[in-house]
Image 1 (tube, helix red, strand yellow):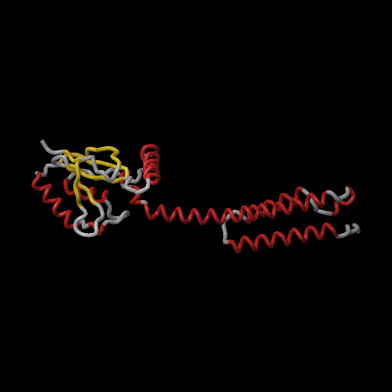
Image 2 (image 1 turned 60 degrees about the vertical axis):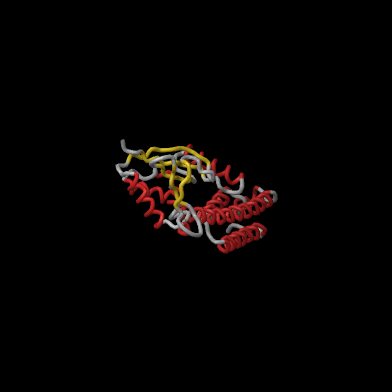
Length: 247
């Protein structure tokens, strides 16, 4: 009977903060259990006996270590998956582990490119069984891209927020001007001025929305605010001027 290769998976809860550990558990529940994308996990491989093998950081010596299967005291046990069976003898498996111990020193540990899940992937490949399911190490595979996207999104949001606030202030000043002008406009002079007309308001808001559609730098926002303010000032001056007689 060929021995089974079993993957043991843990939630990474080795932080000194209970709040952080609970947050990681919640992230794993949402991203793995909820939508099936993955999470923040530690993994280890068991074959021949009651020990599991994994990889971690240490300043000197090998990073390959073993502990009782499913009972790593640093993490919270989640589940086990049977990856397949191997035809290798226990002697051959021990030889593979000795080779991996030399090739995976503890100081080479790196969260995104050389972690415990990468080690288990290579161990399984040498045993001739399928590698880990994609969700186990997906956060490490997408780590750099996720950080870049998050930073870009945050920048765009800050720029958009600045423009929204600026547009709101300008719109508020404009509406105050329209209300003030409408209070003194007589029916006889309405045809001689565009003060407060629906057509002017619609055009102004259309231009405002068009101008603020794409996030820009804070200096662009300030310049745009000044331009619009000058436009409003000119409209008010025109409104205060005596009506011209039609020839």
